[in-house]
Image (cartoon, rainbow, N blue to C red):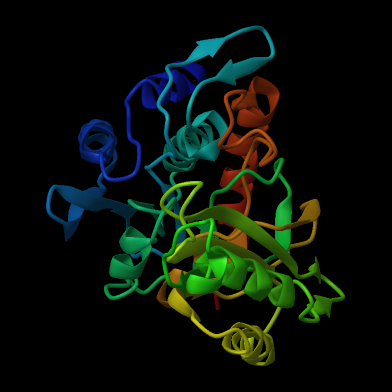
Length: 338
């Protein structure tokens, strides 16, 4: 299957996180056919009930290309014009997955060996596929992860710190506020104090940012709120121990407010190679959860600015370019191997 039809075929399989089975079956069949013709192997790697990663390899894998099979909701099918392929996952990451497969085909046709392809589930939520894969590495020295970087090697990526806050209060009739305690007021005070915490910066990755993503709470307009919640996302640029201590101090200074949930992905400085254009990205990836798979590199066609949107698309020109970039990157890393 040619590059553009393969991209559209992948997009047209609904694989919103948790429902990756159908696209996994398609890719297992497609890669098994390729492996059968070229002396490779393909495995399903169980992750959770009805969810599997895939790993294909040719020879002992020194370099592994990797990306995720899942997408954010909602699913919408592919379309194309002269310049772009559109659809959910066009750039995040089914277009680049198609480019990776075509790059492998070119390498195999030239007689190259010593590489693999790791495809994981769950990147858009909890990275369960990457975390599971990291417990069973295959000895590779280099990992080339695929995310939309406009075909430039990312020299670094920001980390992520997620906090879920829960506030408690006491319900009362809104005509008698002195009889209650507003959980919403408490939560707003805690958020105000959080926004005053100094945020660190990094010469390469730039500024840490804080976003209050969701707010909810209360029972009705005429009831003093007895509960409220908020979700906060920080994009981090380095070690976070001091930052987390400052955030916790700000939260603890308001009675009735606590951290209900917290998770973190660290910021990364990534590999570069001569001859490849570079960039910095502000989003997080599966790379921090794939540390056992080798020195990481990050590259892919498309722009993160349209990922997760109703306008998601990938330029056809960048898809074609990505095939050559992945092929050349694999060869360059194979030459780096002692």
